[in-house]
Image (tube, rainbow, N blue to C red; front, side, top):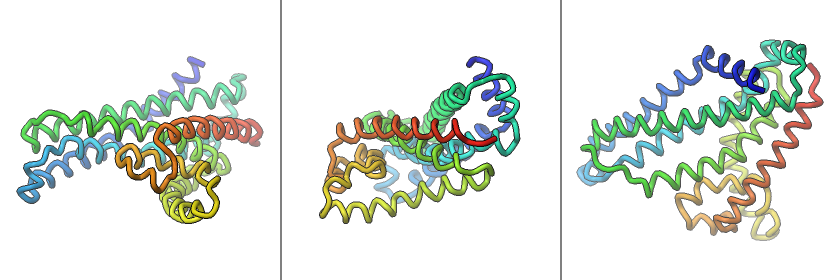
Amino acid sequence: MLTLLRQELYKQIHGKFYIGWGIVILAISLLSGYFYHNGSAAMSATNSSARMFSNGLAMALVAMIVFASSLLTSDFSNNTIKYLFARQFSRGQILISKLIITVLMFVYLVIVAFIAAGIGNILFNEARPFLWSDMLPYLIGMSFYLFLMIPIVLLISNIFKSNAVAIAIGLVFYFVSNVINVFLNILMDKFEWIKYNPLNFLNILRQYSIHEYSQLSRLSLPQLEVGTIIWGIIILVITYLVYNHRNV
């Protein structure tokens, strides 16, 4: 397992993914801080530390979707999967190592977003104190959101062998899922059991920031948390079963 983790870290370090998206997160955070500072008088007087942090995290979310979309397909497109099997690593070990790397990548992007918000706070926000009460709910909500979204993206990308196609499908699903949720909310008025579908639990990110969103999700925040974990585990198991039977 340690060998697999070292190999995954080596690939990510040399792939420069973390550098490119780190720069994007830094740029978005600083740009948002600049516009908040140079906006209207009311906006300039507002402590924008949490806004800079949340904007950076929003880009981190997109980065994680892209990262997860290519996580399993990269070995097939680069034909390195045969090398892994030749060294007698099980597919379960390979999948677990990739999930660990995914968690590490998310932690890294969160740290970048926090540092970027700190720099923006000094440059554009008159070094005001961080609004932890606004930052933490968004971060926790995103963590739950990714706990479900990443397995879904991994499952979908499992079908493809091309990195580009897998990433495109992953991003399309990310945006389309919001549209699908609108139609599901309409159906919930007639069929209450629809509220337990996995896509509805993706509303946890919004509901952490806006508690009134429970009127649309029809679920309380604790219900969303528990359901997100359950669905995330179920979809991870399905992903493993599909990955385990995938032809090389």
